[in-house]
Image 1 (cartoon, rainbow, N blue to C red):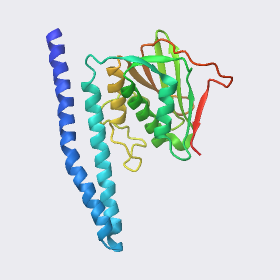
Image 2: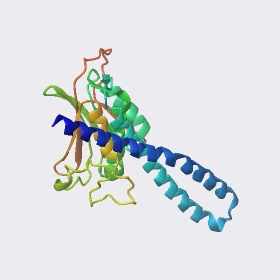
Image 3: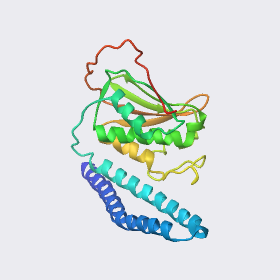
Image 4: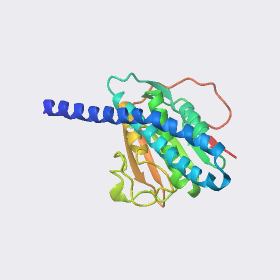
Length: 249
């Protein structure tokens, strides 16, 4: 059994490295295509600008896919013997909001300032950013996105939730598989490559954690990353509430 497990681990590791190598090789031609499009935008006539814009959009979609392939590969390859540290979750969530929120987005946080989790700071930030981006893309118009964290039976539960349509119950176990997208609402117009949640799982597992998803009543999806708890951090006492809210006007 141990021999088979070792072979399976090497196979999965090789697959991730192969995907990463392919993505890396695609970076250079994509960069040249972007440069060529920039030159075209400055030289073609007005009647051709719409076609050039269409080509740019397609190249940007491909570039996003390549970047997500690289992230998926790197997260899995870094899982071995990855040193973990106590990550202050409130600070991490604030940094994610500052990067991901655009005008009109409402992201609320409810995280104790002293709460930490054992993780790789970069991978955890990437996982939460992917969850926030996913929630804003598919449910941002349905209400605020919420980031919360709390101690839970020997773990720290970090949850990103929304008020959107949720996911069919039969699909909940599969949404973390690479390239899997539920039939509902996962259209090209909405964006997405089907790798975002797979990257979340890879990042969580690399941090010796897990991830799960549930539908919220009456509507919405809640994705929870569970990690080992870290020591509490000491913070100055403030009279204001511990609830942090981020809204970009």
